[in-house]
Image 1 (cartoon, rainbow, N blue to C red):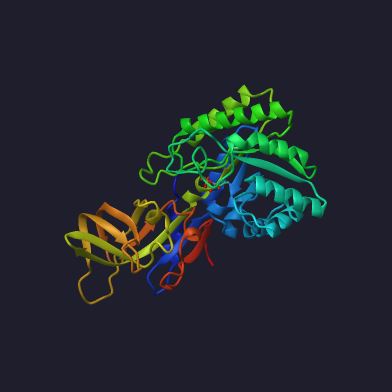
Image 2: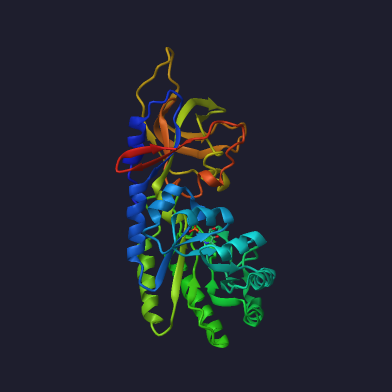
Amino acid sequence: MITINKSAVESYLEQNNESDPVCAYVYDLDHLKDHAQHLKESLPNFCELYYAVKANPAVQLLETLEPIVDGFEVASIGEINKVDELSEKPMLFGGPGKKDHEMIEAMQRNVDYINVESVHELNRMAYLADQAQVKIPILLRVNLSTNVSDSHIRMSGVPTQFGIDERDIRDVIDKALKYEQIEIKGFHFHAMSNNLDVDAHLRFVEMAIEKALTWRKHYDLEAPIIDIGGGIGINYWDTSDPFDWDALAEGLSAFEAKYIDETITLFLEIGRYMTAGCGSYVSEVLDVKTNHGEHFAVLRGGSHHLRLPAAWKMSHPFRIHSVEDWHYPFERPGILNSEVTVAGELCTPNDVLVRKEFVDQLRAGDIMVFEYAGAYGWTISHHDFLSHPHPEQVFVANNVVHKV
Ligand SMILES: Cc1ncc(COP(=O)(O)O)c(C=O)c1O
């Protein structure tokens, strides 16, 4: 269970003396540390915990996670550079559309594994490795034939740009085995995003293990790594009913016992579930008004800072930090016991973070705190649309507030 430590946001607000309306991402690094430690400690020994940097590449988060995780999953030369500057732990380079120069730099840097997403990528990797006179340890990324989840974002089990079609995997293994510069270290199965169903996740993991073992046996491969990717979800719709991580960890322990005679290292590449809970997007209400009988609040901020609720057409979880000060000499707009739609400062009706949710009270000058905003928040958003100033990036550890 993820618990939100609210004091980081409150520490920031107490110390904030800016006259401009509040707009910030606030990260609670103590919360992140405790959460990551819990994830790591709960996993059985045959698991390795990687952090998927794309979920949030902020250096302060990477530094907090570095002593805890076993490695980092990276998807570009930018992410490789960030990790390389602060860690010697293994990196796994995945993702479609790898450029030649990225693969060359990955070979030269501290990258331990590279995912192969297609036959063409395999050919290019072997060619580049031959020129550099190095051997590349690879994981073959598989797009399974079977649908593995009801998650609304799926990368596998359905036609996507990701991985090698399971029907072609034997041909690709045949080819890879002929390349002296390529060493198959295992298989990669990242398949879904924001899955909330533990049983479905365990069924997926078991299927991945069985498939990998079949191919290993058929080709007499050592290939110990079975990478099940990330995809553990945040229940943005009902935060009181979170993904049951401990049940997942128990299920994985049962697999460790079941496959005790096999040499398996199970990689998890956790992104969203690692960092979502440590971050809050904090934004001041500029206006509250009624249009066509519906109430709207307008924020100093919006989907250009936190794109996720607009992209998923959902209400982002929030709480209201009430502010009693009101400095104008005229009435304060607000609503009581009503449904409200919370919009941003952009000139588009798509700039909505909360749709028709009930609030006891919301007034101009109050502050909305959008929780679970620490993953796929700031870096996936379209920051410069309308050229508003960016939010402050605030990192809180031991109640010390650090702004960058
Ligand atoms: C290959 C790979 N691994 C891991 C992740 C992290 O997934 P999540 O944030 O759902 O845990 C992603 C996300 O897109 C991914 O593409």
